[in-house]
Image 1 (tube, rainbow, N blue to C red):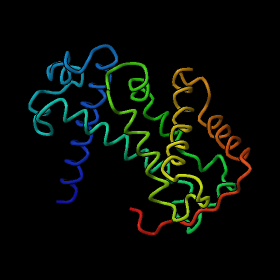
Image 2 (image 1 turned 90 degrees about the horizontal axis):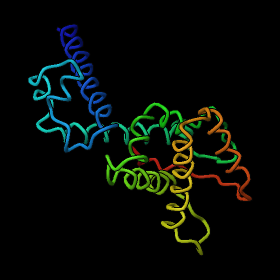
Image 3 (image 1 turned 180 degrees about the vertical axis):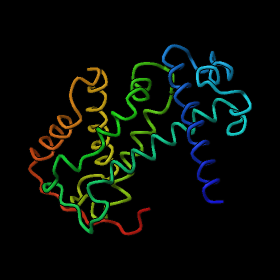
Length: 203
């Protein structure tokens, strides 16, 4: 019984991945409104029935793609402190910085976000997540009471996203390791030595 369920799950994942890959590929050259479900299933080498088993509309498929990206972004961001009680920023190493590996894994989507109008609003959604994560995860994120915590977090989020934008615009000419090294150098160039206590209520 479990073998049958496992086989079914793998088949569903494979079908969904094919549909997602097909839609993103089509969106490189067309707006979403110009893409039909027939276009999607033909490129995915599936039938319309398979599409409707999982989604009602192409917009629902796109939303799931975006949810996948955000979920992976969150995991990659939290990687340096996922098993810690404290996060000492100046003890960071390039090997635990995974956010650029995340961007590389979804390079076609990030390229679409930044070089077309195909995914309106998604850039803001990414920046929102990058701003929200430290506010939720670190109990003492901002100890200087003269600085507005929300503004500080927004500043940090857009700084990271600015590096991603430059990387995409340069067509990923730098390796993920180089990008991690550069981020680390920027952080270490700061005069502040931050130690954050991890909020135990994070998911």
